[in-house]
Every structure is written in C-alpha cells, then in structure tokens.
Length: 293
Image (cartoon, rainbow, N blue to C red; front, side):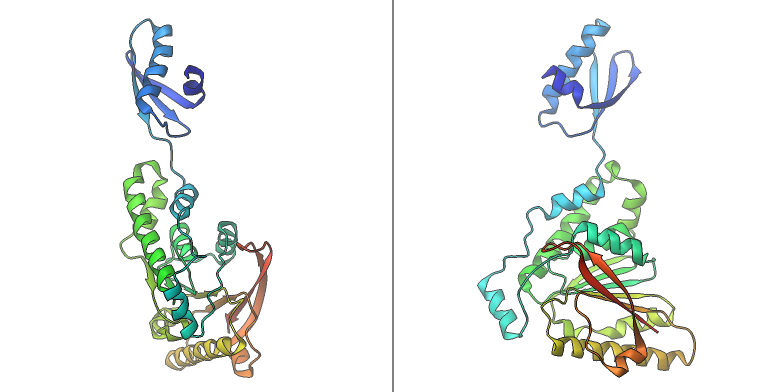
C-alpha cells in the first residue's frame, strides 16, 4: 500500500516543516488511508509526524464528458416513443458522431462567438454539448423528435453544468469561463426537424455570422431532404432580400447524405468539401459540406 500511495504522487511541495501538499494523478478511493500511508513514509525520513494535504487531480474536459455520457444510451427508447416516431414517419435507427469526429469538424469549421449551431436529429445531444464546451459558439441548438432522447439530452446538459460548477477549481479556467459565460446558450427542443423556426437565423446572417447545420442523414429519405432543402432555400432568399445587396453571413450544411439535385438549391449553395469522420457505427464516414454563396 505504501508503494501504491507513492506511485500515485505527481509532485509534493513542503509549505512548512510539518505539512506536505500532495497532488496526485488520480483520485484516491480511501483518501484518509492514503494520507496515513504517505504520512508514515515521510515521518520515517523527517523523524516527526507530517500533516498531509491533498490537492485534487486536474479534471480534463474529455474525461468529464466521457463520464457524463457513460450511462446515457440513446440506442434504446421506449415502445411508446418508438410508436411516436413511426406515426411521424421518422426512422428510429440511432448512431452518433464520435468525440474524435467532433474535434475534427471543430478544427475545420472554427466557430466564433457570434455563430449558431444546429444538430437536426441530435439524439442525446453529445455533439451540441461538445461544440458548446469546446468552442466559443454563441448558441448550440439540438432538435430531437424522440422524447426519450430529448429528455436524456436535457439531463446531460443540466448535469454537465452542475459538474463544471462543482469542479471549476480543478479545470482549465479559460474552459470554465467559456462554458459558464452568461450570454451563451445550449438548448434542446423536442420537435420535428421540419418545424424548425429558421427565422431566428435571419438576424445573425444579416450581421455576417455563420449558421452551421448538421444532420446525420443516413436514414433520411430523399423526399425528406428535399423538404429541408426547400426550407433552407427560403431562408437564404429572405435574408438576401432583406440585405439589399449587402454582404451576409454563411449557412454551412454538414450532411451524411448528399442533398437531392435541385437547380434552385445550386443557386444558393455550393458543395464545398467532403470529410471522412469517425462515427459510432464506422470509421471514415463521408460528411458532405454545402456552403451558401
């Protein structure tokens, strides 16, 4: 036990002759026992009792998020929720973008503190939460028709903020300030994707900011994508009319399935890039990016 306790020490600093501050690389299951064992070792060398003061190990954002989602499973929903999705002609098949995939897209997209992010069919909300936590984005909005998954996303959001506040002294301070900034929003909505109120995106676009729209569209029908495509065309048309020739912001669409060919869509959007991103069901899944023009 003595050698185990010593091996867990990252560093220690002597603040007084009878006190030692210890920072470990992990949390002790039995902190009192660890204090006694470390104290015995140090007393052997100092010849007198030594008071041990433990500093908590640092808490990294990735570890916090992994712990948060450890027991949140969007792959299983109730039969009642399943029937609700079937009635709405929505596919209940579930999959998620991985943390590596999220970080890759964040690196490519570089969201700012003026931008908005939508995940259409957000499931348990991990992409929304991670882009909110890892970037300064102004607003992260998750749209989910499944009530079970929506509730899990809300639960994860509330628990995440609670954990950040509780552990803020152990976390990187710039990360804490970004997450807890009062003017930023992480929001989940229990609704059909085709009922999104895109009018809230008009003002940010007129201000020159970017609207990111992500959809894991693998199981979405061509008809469904065509209807969503029409909504985004109307959004761009309205913004351009209001701008009266002035430069506007961009709408960037990230989709796992190509949008249906539509001459009107091609007037407003261009296919800009293709990424290969890790998903829960496979690595190197193609993600197509469309950018407004």
